[in-house]
Length: 248
Ligand code: PEP
Image (cartoon, rainbow, N blue to C red; front, side, top):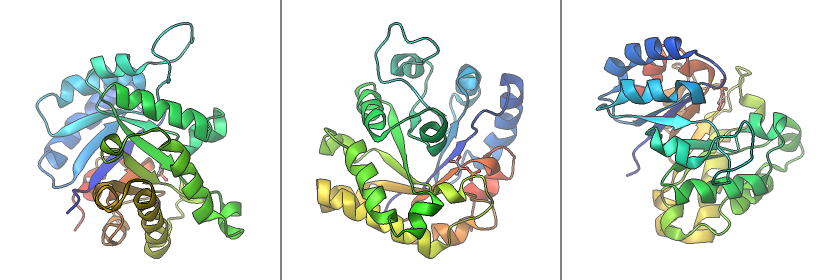
């Protein structure tokens, strides 16, 4: 039985004081929930989030990091920096990073390897554009993204990685994939992991769906056998996020 994991991706929202307000409102609502809960906050909010979440069951996540250890990479943040602040998870290869900041399957793989080296759990994002879906390319594309992201990742490390299937056409658009569409791709991702690492790891790895998840559609998505939770954008910025975590 896989424990569901629900992560909020706050994107570039919430100043430190706003972050503290939201976290204080959410702690009593989600601290004792069944799914694992992660708040992926902007870098500058991390120290405040870590402080507020100390002693709770809620983990702090980052939204990106660089693959290099340190050095002349102006504006970048290293895995060590995140780890020292109590970060446990890091989103890697979000489609907005790929679209606006030229991230590629190769950079995603480098970041995954560095994150694992520093005991950070990657939340690896994959997913297709509307055009790719309409051309019937979704499954091949996602398989390619996963195969590259997991290159040189050991079986032991692979089991702990979180995969987020996020169809780009469903992110921030209010257009959610049907539960059948989301399940089809999540099941195919599990098959891809089985081909790479075998049955046991495929059965244990957690695969989230992301794309306009909200309190109304969460429970039907989570009823599908291969959907182990969600990466939530817009709806993670309000206390209603608790209704997604506590879906019935
Ligand atoms: C996301 O940013 O990962 C996301 C899924 O956004 P939204 O829930 O707003 O579609």
